[in-house]
Length: 548
Image 1 (cartoon, helix red, strand yellow):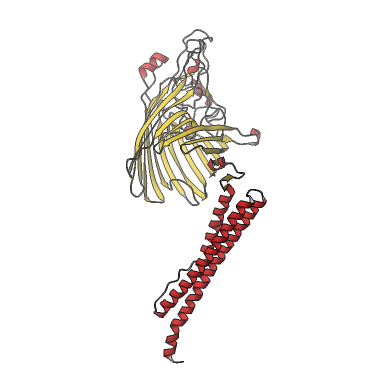
Image 2 (cartoon, rainbow, N blue to C red; image 1 turned 90 degrees about the vertical axis):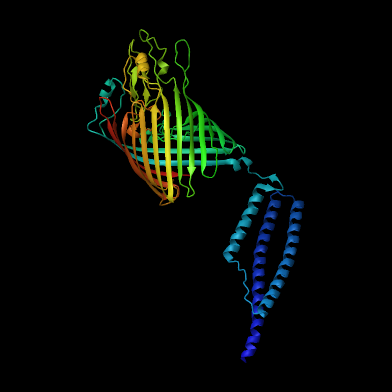
């Protein structure tokens, strides 16, 4: 065969190849569509057999499907002919023609997506008639986590024996142990349900482990002797969000304030109502504010009991700045006004005078200055009574010496220049402006030293949140809480085993072992700030946490 004849036949061969490719592509697509139609027809027949869809409606759907099939076949044939002609012309002109190729795995994915969409529609709606599943299932979500902890507690040899703490003039309390090391095995479990009532209204409840008389720690020590673990409700709330920048919550809900664990333990639930505002000024600047009222202890008042309800008002305002690389700076200034939490002396004669017994805080940790409200009568022990070594109840005669009006400045800088690794610096400063030496002297008869300042600095490097395997974060912090800087009832229950009049550092880290599962190691080393009795405590915590 001559060279010129070969060249003449080349365009014809290209045209034939193009026609075959176009026909094969159309045939493949037709095969996929045919399988999908068959699946749909099978689903319609199954619905008719179950009595969910009437035969008339099924026939109408099948007729529409047949019409669509015929129209699709005609269109596919025309497309194939057009593609063949275009290929022949292009080949004749000796031009390069690109064929759009759809891989098999893409076709399979498209088929799966279509089938999933069809199943979802058939499962929930058939001609606007609901099937067996109720609509509220679409509005319910679940959340929860489980944490296992090994916690060695080490006491210094310099510590005073536990029985002598009751003789401390200003901070009388009794600890079950101050000298013998402990090893505790603890668990925490939480499970919550959230419901979207409408576009602007939500509600939720959450169950948690932990002793029912402890408002802070959800941890519970485990051993066979304990039998069953306690399980209680620690979230019951309704939240209204009429605007994207405003929300109102009522009931028992999570801490609504921008804060650290220096003033509020992270597990503390807030009872009452709070309104939050989050105006956004532009892409970089936004503000935030929260106001709320929260009951602490509702007292049954009468002629015998003259104490008043304990509660507090909280207000906070601040701003947040976000850079183009998603680095952030946030600052908030808060004021917490605690009402009727200070003790009042009975000033009566004998044990029958109990008019102001209700001024004693129903729950405390340790650290705040106290006095005996039965000072002119038969006294009872003014002490910190505890069966678990972390927190407990005050006795009937132990009232707080100071009033508490706390001003709290909190700031955070999150540098995302090395994302996903972040550098996060936190600072927290609080001062109790309610501390008044002269007022305390008149009310208690005792001249207390002014110890009303607390602060904390914390540096963390790593992922801001542990979500995936191999996510990590290391951190270090230094904290100092003077005796009457914040209320010892609500501050962190791990640092110094709870309470104030403590200073020390915290070191630790997180490591993700799988999705939403991580390991935590922390070392908290603390000692007392003032007082005649030494108390140094080292707490180690090794956690395995998973959430769902």
